[in-house]
Image (tube, rainbow, N blue to C red; front, side, top):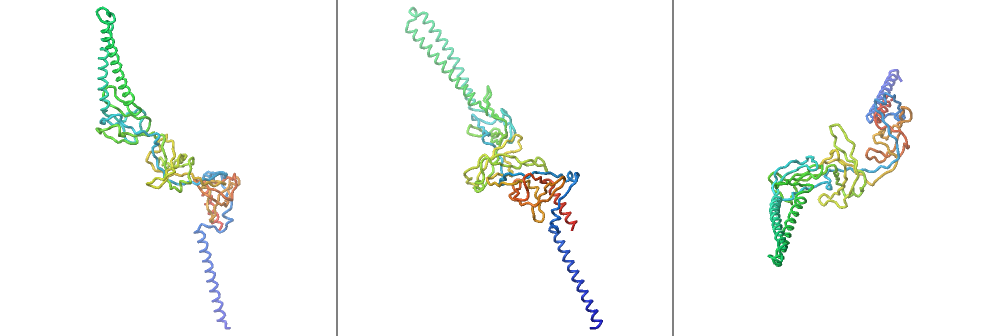
Length: 410
């Protein structure tokens, strides 16, 4: 082989080795980029390395803990809920008589107090009763005068009996006096009936009347809210019409409509959690906790859904009839085991991990097997024991520290 050929072969071999080296290096870089892109670290032992934080870091990251405890986790059924007045604390107010509306003192949605005037109307029936009362009292006065006259005549007849007045005349005057007494009793009974009507028919927890004219006033029977107003000034009214509805909004119903299949998983006494609207933007309120009172046994023919009812206190009037809210209904499906807050569980290398406090300011990432998650709680199947202190608030910051430290090591 000539010297030229030998040098040519050496040059070709060097070029091939350089090309192969460049290709391998490019493949390695591509693999690293792919790993970083998926958030994976190169070595698992680096990921599971304990983290030690200073006191300042604990305060800065607001690290908080919870203890792993045994408990029962119930499956919660999400449902839309609507707020309705409690019908056991709702009164539909009818007028006692017929007439025309004179004035209206309230509006729908207005809060009212017990005894507060709602509206006034001209009560024709009360007007007739007033006339009857006047006539009856006049007749009673006349009857009393006739009774006195008959009594005097009978007294004189008894004094003169057997002389100037015969026995027959005495008996006649006695009968006249007795009749006059009965007439007075009848007029007094009529007055009693009218007074009873004024006290019972035209006066009630929802109505009162003026003492002289024919004006009647509908009043609130208790502290509550006007939920409906179905009349207007100068409108005709009669006892068959509901003019005002007042509800005691200190108690309301939260009603959820669910499918019959879901209703079979519910039972009276289960917990219902209703998400309340925040008072201001960015604020939040804890969920309203109540108990399921009833689960209907028959579906609504119009919707095919089953009504689930929960009665709640509403002393601060945060719930208004007509509101639609998100709700969670406790079912009879349960799981028992070790429970921790759901926010404590993080994911590293497709593995569920929690940070366990294993020493003073030392937190060890621990792989766990998770089960059912409901209502902010997670069931742990393996990896922890009861009493372990788990990082809740701040766990995501610890995960970030692990990922960064793994990248730096690589």
